[in-house]
Image (cartoon, rainbow, N blue to C red):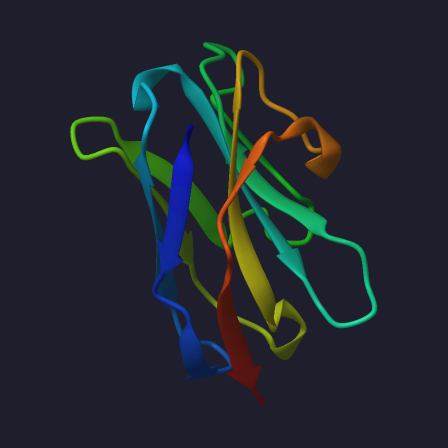
Length: 124
Protein backbone atom coordinates (compact mmCIF):
# COMPACT_ATOMS: atom_id res chain seq x y z
CA UNK A 1 0.00 0.00 0.00
CA UNK A 2 1.50 3.29 -1.13
CA UNK A 3 1.51 6.02 1.50
CA UNK A 4 2.10 9.70 0.83
CA UNK A 5 2.98 12.45 3.29
CA UNK A 6 3.09 16.09 2.24
CA UNK A 7 5.09 18.82 3.95
CA UNK A 8 6.27 22.36 3.34
CA UNK A 9 3.05 24.33 3.46
CA UNK A 10 2.76 27.60 5.30
CA UNK A 11 1.90 31.28 5.20
CA UNK A 12 3.72 33.42 2.66
CA UNK A 13 3.24 36.76 0.96
CA UNK A 14 2.32 37.31 -2.64
CA UNK A 15 5.39 36.99 -4.85
CA UNK A 16 7.16 34.62 -2.49
CA UNK A 17 8.26 31.06 -3.21
CA UNK A 18 7.52 27.83 -1.41
CA UNK A 19 8.56 24.23 -1.99
CA UNK A 20 6.25 21.37 -1.10
CA UNK A 21 7.52 17.84 -0.61
CA UNK A 22 5.75 14.52 -0.80
CA UNK A 23 7.46 11.53 0.73
CA UNK A 24 6.35 8.11 -0.43
CA UNK A 25 6.55 4.67 1.13
CA UNK A 26 5.13 1.21 0.58
CA UNK A 27 5.59 0.98 -3.16
CA UNK A 28 8.14 1.09 -5.95
CA UNK A 29 8.47 4.86 -6.31
CA UNK A 30 10.09 4.64 -9.69
CA UNK A 31 6.90 3.09 -11.11
CA UNK A 32 4.61 5.81 -9.83
CA UNK A 33 3.21 8.79 -11.67
CA UNK A 34 3.02 11.60 -9.13
CA UNK A 35 0.51 14.41 -9.16
CA UNK A 36 -0.28 17.53 -7.19
CA UNK A 37 -3.80 18.82 -6.67
CA UNK A 38 -5.25 21.62 -4.59
CA UNK A 39 -8.58 22.34 -3.03
CA UNK A 40 -10.31 25.32 -1.47
CA UNK A 41 -13.42 25.14 0.73
CA UNK A 42 -16.54 24.38 -1.24
CA UNK A 43 -14.68 23.56 -4.42
CA UNK A 44 -13.60 20.38 -6.13
CA UNK A 45 -10.04 19.22 -6.09
CA UNK A 46 -8.12 20.97 -8.86
CA UNK A 47 -5.21 19.57 -10.86
CA UNK A 48 -1.96 21.47 -10.45
CA UNK A 49 0.87 19.39 -11.90
CA UNK A 50 2.05 15.88 -12.54
CA UNK A 51 5.32 14.21 -13.35
CA UNK A 52 5.09 11.24 -15.64
CA UNK A 53 7.30 8.81 -17.50
CA UNK A 54 6.46 10.20 -20.90
CA UNK A 55 9.47 11.17 -22.97
CA UNK A 56 7.54 13.83 -24.85
CA UNK A 57 5.65 15.32 -21.89
CA UNK A 58 7.39 14.33 -18.67
CA UNK A 59 5.68 17.10 -16.72
CA UNK A 60 2.20 18.50 -17.17
CA UNK A 61 0.80 21.64 -15.59
CA UNK A 62 -2.46 23.43 -15.16
CA UNK A 63 -2.56 26.63 -17.19
CA UNK A 64 -2.97 28.63 -14.00
CA UNK A 65 0.45 27.60 -12.70
CA UNK A 66 2.44 27.08 -15.89
CA UNK A 67 5.65 29.08 -15.80
CA UNK A 68 5.42 29.61 -12.04
CA UNK A 69 5.38 26.09 -10.62
CA UNK A 70 7.72 23.20 -11.29
CA UNK A 71 7.35 19.55 -10.35
CA UNK A 72 10.33 17.24 -10.01
CA UNK A 73 11.21 14.02 -8.28
CA UNK A 74 14.13 12.38 -6.51
CA UNK A 75 13.81 8.69 -7.29
CA UNK A 76 16.61 7.74 -4.91
CA UNK A 77 14.78 9.31 -1.97
CA UNK A 78 11.24 8.55 -3.12
CA UNK A 79 10.22 12.19 -2.89
CA UNK A 80 8.37 14.44 -5.31
CA UNK A 81 8.54 18.20 -5.02
CA UNK A 82 6.40 21.11 -6.10
CA UNK A 83 8.38 24.31 -6.40
CA UNK A 84 5.99 27.26 -6.33
CA UNK A 85 7.26 30.66 -7.38
CA UNK A 86 5.57 34.03 -7.77
CA UNK A 87 2.78 32.91 -5.51
CA UNK A 88 -0.56 34.67 -5.70
CA UNK A 89 -3.41 34.90 -3.21
CA UNK A 90 -5.49 32.69 -5.52
CA UNK A 91 -2.93 29.91 -4.98
CA UNK A 92 -4.16 29.63 -1.40
CA UNK A 93 -5.43 26.08 -0.90
CA UNK A 94 -4.77 22.73 0.67
CA UNK A 95 -2.30 20.99 -1.59
CA UNK A 96 -2.47 17.23 -2.01
CA UNK A 97 0.05 14.78 -3.37
CA UNK A 98 -1.36 11.86 -5.33
CA UNK A 99 0.00 8.78 -7.07
CA UNK A 100 -1.04 6.34 -9.73
CA UNK A 101 0.63 3.81 -11.97
CA UNK A 102 1.30 3.98 -15.71
CA UNK A 103 0.30 7.25 -17.35
CA UNK A 104 -0.12 10.80 -16.20
CA UNK A 105 -3.57 12.28 -15.70
CA UNK A 106 -5.23 15.56 -14.80
CA UNK A 107 -8.21 13.77 -13.29
CA UNK A 108 -8.28 13.35 -9.55
CA UNK A 109 -10.49 10.26 -9.80
CA UNK A 110 -7.74 8.46 -11.68
CA UNK A 111 -5.29 8.64 -8.80
CA UNK A 112 -5.41 5.75 -6.37
CA UNK A 113 -3.28 7.08 -3.55
CA UNK A 114 -3.51 10.38 -1.68
CA UNK A 115 -1.78 12.23 1.09
CA UNK A 116 -3.63 14.20 3.74
CA UNK A 117 -2.65 17.57 2.35
CA UNK A 118 -0.69 20.61 3.43
CA UNK A 119 -2.10 24.12 3.66
CA UNK A 120 -0.61 26.95 1.64
CA UNK A 121 -1.80 30.45 2.43
CA UNK A 122 -0.70 33.40 0.30
CA UNK A 123 -1.44 36.83 1.69
CA UNK A 124 -1.76 39.90 -0.50
